[in-house]
Amino acid sequence: MMCPTMPASRWPTQSRRGLSMLEILVAIVILSFGLLPIFRLMSQSRQVMYRSVLEMKAMAAASSLMDALHRAPAAVLARFPTAELPETQLAARGIVPPAPDPTLPRMVSVRYLNDPSLPRERFSNPFGQILEMTVRVTSAAPGTAYHGRPIVTLRDIRYLDR
Image 1 (cartoon, rainbow, N blue to C red):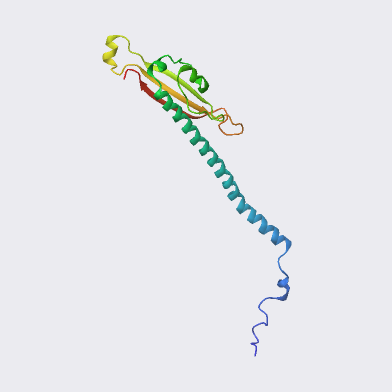
Image 2: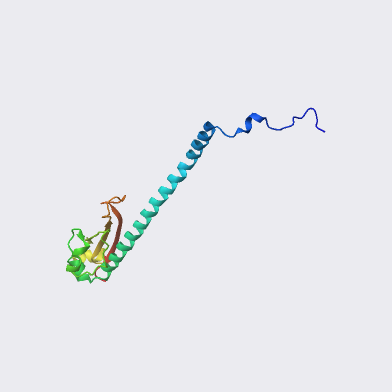
């Protein structure tokens, strides 16, 4: 037996037809506004990953070339010009650079920080000749964020009298 106050069906018969086209379009718009930031975040994370891989390769290239400069004889470094040289000219000067990467050109500069030549300068500077060696790595690959700009600049000093 049915209760006279309760209807026979919980839902009216008119609302059983489904969703309207307007409701579907509104749901798609709301869903797209929710998914757009997620897709943008994925794109930005890919760019950050590419930059970090490029920076890691550049740091490895710069440190390997800096190691070659540290292994070079002091007489070779003393004759090094103060201008910035590409890594292709290092072999002619007696420094054997590691294998170059064509997408990451390296530039080397060596300069004197001080050169005590008088005896009284030896007392104020007991270290002798100090060279500053700089390796700058740029990107030659077009379309990157670093194209033509330095990725890594590595500086170190070397005492020649020791």
